[in-house]
Image (cartoon, rainbow, N blue to C red; front, side, top):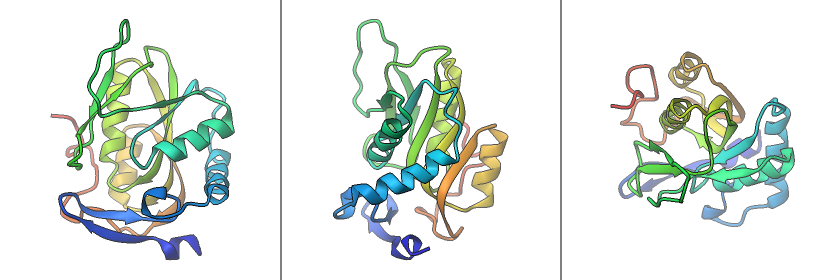
Length: 195
């Protein structure tokens, strides 16, 4: 519980509120051993036997995804916001709807039949995670579960994950009112579908 008492929010100029915690090195020094311990707890709740790759999203999800991949012995793939073409490799694209720093993510190196687990630093509304899962599945990539160090405990987000048939594993749950963007509703079956 001590960790949850250190979580706070800061206002960003364009993106509303941002969750700030000590497992994210963007907001100050991060203790790699503490991160490894939390990632170990997360990995202990997940079945990675049928996983080929770990997928992470910048900015905040890159380091937890790396630590998770290292712990479970799976290759890591990171999305990028840079649009480029690799010879013979089709990118899978999805939109992060609530950011101002490049909404489209591109995932290279995955193809039909690959099995991935997505690891995030935090899940607030679930919209980014659901957009990624839908794009990956449309490309034939299997996604049955995702993990996050922390998540806002909003029943609407959990219901959306259940409707999408993805198991979300979380180490720390923040109170429902701890939303990053209070003006943006959490994911649900209607609001999170790509248009």
